[in-house]
Image (tube, rainbow, N blue to C red; front, side, top):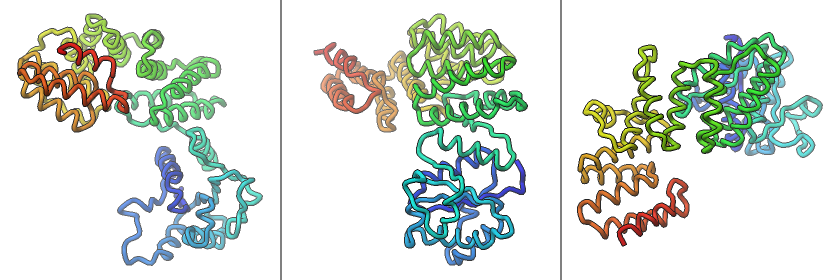
Length: 413
């Protein structure tokens, strides 16, 4: 990315939900821009605001002008109008280069001074759909002569994101379809971040199909793995296994493929098969980080009601779970609970479960474990109270299964 490029984003504070997306898009492409919210670059108390804005506009090469009824309002958009008026005077020398962004359809808004210069200009109409911010980012890249890369962001459920991005970056950039493919992948990323899995799955499916047609020499290993992850999260286990098999054709010893198959086997109660997959990763010296496989192996053993070793127990209890996705945090914490149950440490089990509930990480398994901690000590009223409270919460908490909770209540009534 050119160090000479610097962006200034002119916007009303009332439109922050849009401008945050714009700044995130610029950051994803490693563009340099002034971020008013950054503590180093923010306007300090006592500073002359107009002077600081002038200095930043003087230093920018491109000005993204976010236009809305708020920015054009004489009171709400006081600073926006000042920025635009100054930039227009300075623009006689050709800089900054204006990139107008409309937050409403062009036909529905009348551009007033100082924004009237854009009445006959091509403006990007930005809305809240992921496709809109992706198209905007692509246009900025094309305008500045830079290659667009989808910001495949680090996500706890995609621990292999660096490898995924590296694979994408190595696609043939000379291919005329590159931008179209990258836009599809960028849209996938936005939907995945929002946890809109059905749409994310459609996008990654479309990406794979498009690659097969437009770049037949490219073997999309991680897109197949990502597709399988989406299918797993949607409970489409047969489809997920098929996707992992496609990835396996490309890289049969890939750790993420083996681990993914193990995860699907575990979720379909095929514990022995799952255990075998995770042990393959742990037993292979080529796999540098086998942490996830060790976690999954321990959870699988506990699911089979197998005894785990002292070393495995210490690993489970000492593991820092803060960097994992919330659903995996829940699984690890519940595994600790199952371990305490197996060793008869029911007071520790109660303390653990209460902490899980306090942190809003609990699911039906957590509730069952807390119930068992009371039943083991003859505290039947407490056990019943736990289930009844959970049944009420299940009305609005999708992690709690009302039918299973009723079953737990009926078992000792």
